[in-house]
Length: 177
Image (cartoon, rainbow, N blue to C red; front, top):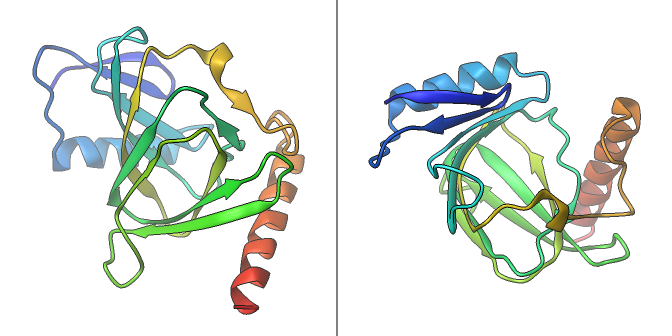
């Protein structure tokens, strides 16, 4: 398959037919290992204006995904590789739900869909996560709402502190159940 590099972390599949197989997944894993942001993706959709967005994304566990929501959109993840908790927050930053996903059937489901605008982030529990994400387009960055209760990611120390505290909250909640 022919890929065109759109940015350091984004590649676009060219042509009317896109296939993703072991070679593309190996490429994503290798590219994520070298990525400064800890993640890389292949867009199966041709551009940001497309009405359906499909992406194959590889994400390292040290990558900071600021909690965010997408008003007016749905999103779905189908795991290709790894284990993750999808953390759903209320508007004040309290954890309202933790959705475990894994490609290991003993660890949880391998698919989830969020059809309402809720703040969410990822806690990657494996050496790497590879997901097939589907959402409706078009993509307009200004329409993404970022959680005011979480750091924006420009301060790596603050982002790491937030991720560590979030993991501790999740672990404490799991122990109390």
